[in-house]
Amino acid sequence: MSDNKMEVKNLDFYYDDFQALNKINIPLKSNKVTALIGPSGCGKSTFLRTLNRMNDLIEGTRVEGEILFDEKNIYDPDVDVVALRKRVGMVFQQPNPFPKSIFDNVAYGPRIHGLKDKGKLAEIVEKSLQGAALFSEVKDRLDDSALGLSGGQQQRLCIARALAVRPEVLLMDEPASALDPVATAKIEDLIAELKKDYTIVIVTHSMQQAARVSDNTGFFLMGDLVEFDKTDKIFENPTDQRTEDYITGRFG
Amino acid sequence: MDKNLAKRKITEKIIFNLLGLLMLSSIAILALIIFFIFKRGIGVISPGFLLEMPKNGMTEGGILPAILGSFYLVTGSIIVATPLGVFAAIYMTEYAKKGKLIRIIRIGVNNLAGVPSVVFGLFGLSIFVKYLNFGVSILSGSLTLAIVILPTIIRASEEALMSVPDDYRSSSLALGATKWQTIKNVVLPAALPGILTGCILGVGRVAGETAPIIFTAATFFSMRLPDSIFSEVMTLPYNIYALVATGTFPQKQVPIAYGTAVVLLVLVLLINLIAIFMRIRYSKKNHK
View 1 (cartoon, helix red, strand yellow):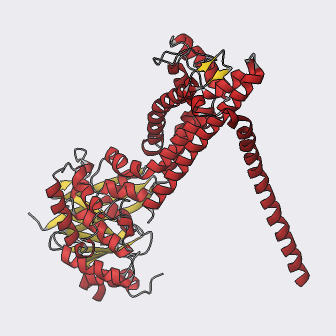
View 2 (tube, chains in turn orange, red):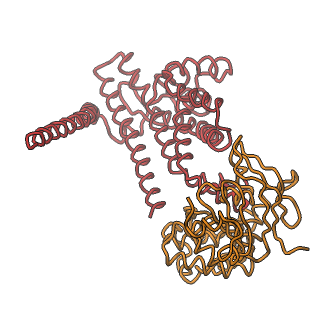
């Protein structure tokens, strides 16, 4: 078996007649962080959302090519989207906890997947909050509303919520872009910690962030994957002139 | 330059005072109605008025059957209209594809809200009373009233559902929840205050409706309390209408009509207060 958790092969993506992604090929390595960078509208978020089929929710979208997940194409007709999303978790750009208690937010996933045992739920909630480096800050107020947390805490809560269903892959769509530098640093430390257990794909606008947290980086431009390589290589010695222009800020 | 500024300030002052005056006068009209009704009606209000049967051909005694009748009709119509309206709204906002069909349905619902209520009364008469043979009864009246408030409930529910941020839906779906799980566990709880407020305002509306029940449920006078959903009932609004329009002893019956109006008014105000109170409570809980 290869060390690719997911492998994207010749992926085309369309919004109605508009082709948003052209023949994307990316291997997503197990227990590595893959960063996706590129200017706004380049398709990196669209690409991220093809990995857990969130784009299915938008009417008029269409996919060609395949995305292998443990060797199985997730766009095969016999794939259950609900089961797929349990294995491929997602953290959004805006911290978006439910208007429920901290506990209920984290317990939400396990509950919808049928877990009722209170002891087990409590255990999962604690573990997930610890996994998201939030437990020590909230352990005395698990029954308080999640909306009372700070933005950074809310985002870590959303990470805990995603971890609670024990996904194998974690997708992060600019998870720190709405946060201040201190909260951002915490999220970045967390990502480094999480990759021991998860395969992570992160979309980011910040090239410093990509350089700090990722092992591999893909540079998107107008629906094309211009370059994909080890992060060091991309930032120190990119092959493509367009990549170099972008990372050195000469782009535009 | 200064002259211009002075002129603008004067205009500002005039507009401000004019708006205040208009606001005051509309409040004053409302206060006047309440004052007038209370002044004419408060005299007959007593525990007996609320708890006794009418006596001597509706010239003495209480209005208990009308209070109970209104209560039954309101309860019946809410039981029928709430699930129908809420589920219709869920379908329209969450499941249906956005397009022509949904727009046409929405226009239909809005037009339903504009239909004069006496027309609903006639509809109820021909469908529930005659065709389905429910007779003039609580059942026929409740069903007719349910149709009257259905558009209100659908619209309130739709607005409440649409105001739930899409983020909640995506994050629930991204955790592997099904669409129905997402609606049941995240969307509905978040929309509940708005839905409840809409239902309660519907209750207030239904409690005062007269035209839809004239042919379908109401009776002028009843010797006994209703004993099944097929009984005809006295109701508060119809009681007022009947006493004033067809009463044979106006000097004794008109005060009773005003007393009934006081009871109805207090009831509706109370229901609306509950709605307002609930909205405040929930919005505090959700946004702290």
